[in-house]
Image 1 (cartoon, rainbow, N blue to C red):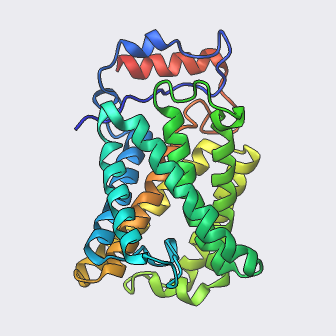
Image 2: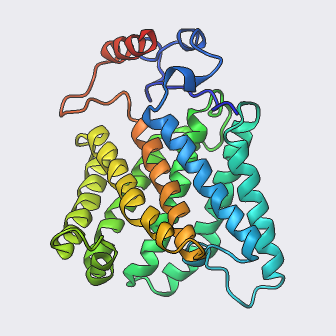
Length: 308
């Protein structure tokens, strides 16, 4: 399978500030061969595999992904819908990794993820707006939507003729991602005992780590929202979530290999980590520190990476 070609372009597309498409065309046919293990390509893979994995679990169980897909028990043909959901997740997840259909598959996946937020999570938030737990479910799903949205915009030609125009602006999903990170941080404080219980027993001061990671989520979200070192903040956020996958969820699956819940948490965390890496990769035009790169500096950086 080929990773779909990606446009690593600055968000300012005006003449004189964007890298011309022909500069990038010279490095294709595949973005993976040039930007191997770069953040947006890594995020692309994690995102697709994580969601496809959820689909496999739905096909094997005839059920949805627990609190991430809180479909009520009274829904007619619930089991059949779970199988249909599994097929869609597997098909779109695998399709996202196939160059010829990646763009269409990413769009389908993003729209489907948006229905989780609008139809499943939003009513729960409306019913209990003061409950941090329901906001956590809402924001975890929102992170997935933002990841798919940004990834779709990074695929060549995906922003053409989008209406309304805000759908073609990557700043919108990035801001939503930042807001979601703030809520993720608050949930660590609101559910300190539960969060600390997930910290590996071999680490000292588990409550301290719960506070630390909550503060990390919160600070990263604010940094992204207010444009203060957003590239560094989003990269650290993606790194932290990826660490959760390696230190918490992978060992959980290893210790309980037949547990659907453990596998679900692993795949969801992997997809969220992928979405975070995609968001971080979309900030390539931003400086690591306080100063923002000039358009000419952006071009020099990208051309240097292309030549390396």
